[in-house]
Image (spheres, rainbow, N blue to C red):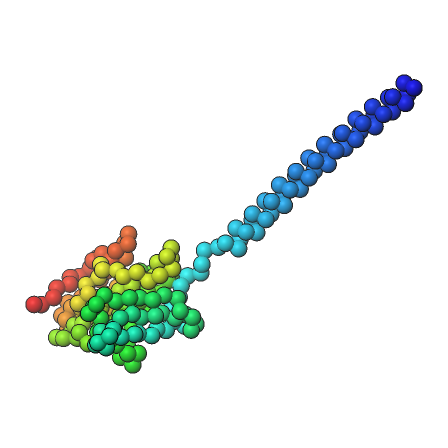
Length: 194
């Protein structure tokens, strides 16, 4: 009888020990699988690729009076990606054949930006320019006011990562660099004759 009782105790001990080993193995497998799943999710949630100028296009819509632009929809591969709304009487209505939009990386962050040349405002070698920089966080084009709006031309220089802005009739030139969220004059001067 004692032998029988010892066999039952031994069996119970082995059963509990095996159960604990199996539970610990399950915990390890769960932890390994959970870590693997997290790594898999982290890989799938990556930062979006840089927003290049390739395959960008736009369409402009007039305000009610048709003299001013109301909004511009920007497309990437024929899919709308952003709508830029213009304040009332800010930008004259423009058309694609006027080459009024420049897609270029102005702040040299690898993302495409937009310069709108307000062709209808041209006078004495200058015109208004509106600058929209692509913001990675919002995935939108945000207006930047740190370059002179009224100027004689804007030319990004990718070699030294600057933007050259000309005065009227190219009488002077100013070189700007994008530093801490704004364009800073680093060379030359920019003056507008009254």
